[in-house]
Length: 433
Image (cartoon, rainbow, N blue to C red; front, top):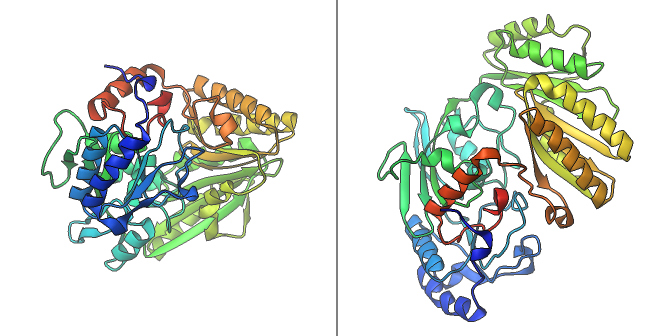
């Protein structure tokens, strides 16, 4: 069964008005309000914003909304609300702000169970009291919530050592549009047969269900952290250094490239552990750097990704993936394309072949043409380009996710199983799912 994007129509104002009394009875008067201008999502204005306080309340809200034919936009810290395609409708915003408890920190087992509305920064602060951490470094940790991080599959430089969310998330509680509270993975109470819920939820942008709780495996806080920064002469030297580190016995917890315009690229390497262990690895990496010039070490280099969201407009920011050996080719293409189109560009890439880029200083038509050129080049090499930020005029003309390939039918069928009424985030996932 395929989802037809045009098959669902927005409910009438009268239907929403009738629904409000039912929703108010679930969450209480003080946790429901009329939407304000700042709640507008890329030109689509919701009617109501509400904040369930328990998983059970969230389930009742979704069941009631689905039965009434209302379209729901999930929201956590709102740090990544612009990610995804333009929404078709937004009647109701369901915020997880009150679902913010750390349910359990089983420090002896090195796991934690946390509600979706808990900010990443608050979670790390609590875990640190027992010398542990969730080995993940998402964007804007002070605002980003656990649910939003999982829903957008956001990870950073630590992935070179600890992997992504697929490696760290071991259990999840997902509230489905029909009100079902589905649990899977660690500490199972109820399974949905045939589906790996944690992996399905990662990167699904809240289109299958709203994440209520997540269970993570943890790692110890490092005793010491050392960062080395190098400036290399060109992209070939950059790629050679990255590949030599990846092919060595070194165990970095960060391997990153920072590049912009015609400037020489810079490579950051981070080691964590004991003082002696860090020193041994630093000695080893110094033998791999060749002609690279060591520059002043800057631990703040690991926050460089966040800087890609500021600059001149119009602009676009996107997430790319490709084989590490192809990073040189991508940066060469970025440089030549930017020079030809009079664009400025910046990029922050991880050594494993994923990264973020920003282009700015051109008209909408030029940005759109560059997106298509970069995407075609990446997809031909087995990579991808997902647009995270761009003007609505551009979003209306492309699918920000790129090509789904031969997986689209499978994704449509999964959406049909989990959300047959098209309640959650209508239109915002790949191909308008």
